[in-house]
Image 1 (tube, chains in turn yellow, cyan):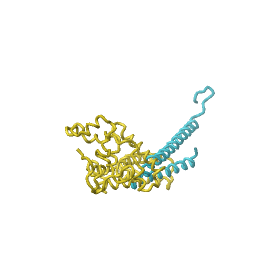
Image 2 (image 1 turned 135 degrees about the vertical axis):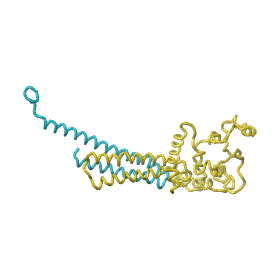
Image 3 (image 1 turned 180 degrees about the horizontal axis):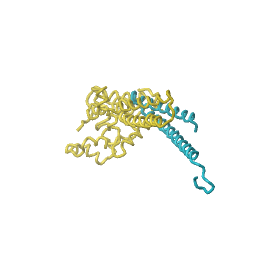
Image 4 (image 1 turned 45 degrees about the vertical axis):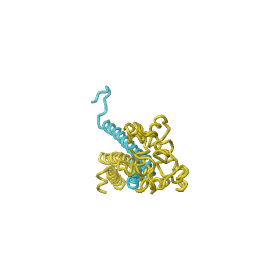
Length: 221
Length: 87
């Protein structure tokens, strides 16, 4: 706990500011002092300063939380994907990336976030789309049905892969299929037969590879 | 605005702010899609409203104090003479 507070003090700051503000507000409600300058300053701290600090640090802490795998798994229909990503023996593309220290507990976000200037905003808007879809459609969907019906909203962009994997290394161009992707922009790195599928579920919900079986097609240069 | 009315509004603002703070702390202690979204939208809306209520009461109080101050100053100063000069 102490390590996590030192590593990320925002949750502690949020709670501390909220507690101070709450103490000031409860003091006013219970004691009901006259509205003089001192009371106005007390209420300015209790209704303005500390709540704003708490909300600001809490919002940022919340934003950080939305990038974590646990957060994605907060919706029950994501459980199969989360289980696979956390399975140390799984050979799916997503699980192999989740075992990479650079991805860590943010493996979902790292691969599914948009990049560029407005990438974070676009990702958050897409996240609201996910929440809307969950609340209106998938909130009571059984897991067996979820793996059959839930699909990615738009084709997985290769730019996400090339954000880390270089396409300028000599070895990349020597692979014939890689040359083909240069001509065909619609060919996805994560498509079946190339390096994918990324998750061990086909669109019909059937496992595409045994979780503890042979390595997935392709490697990670 | 009477002092009693001011106090009522400020107590309401305090209660609203406490509710907002509880939502924010909830999102930190038990982070889930629902709690984080509520903290970032509903809680911030309620918190902003409570701060606006406070600002409203303070402005009303300052205006009242200024009016009272002018009245007291007028009462304290002597009445002007017939020629308009202060005697």
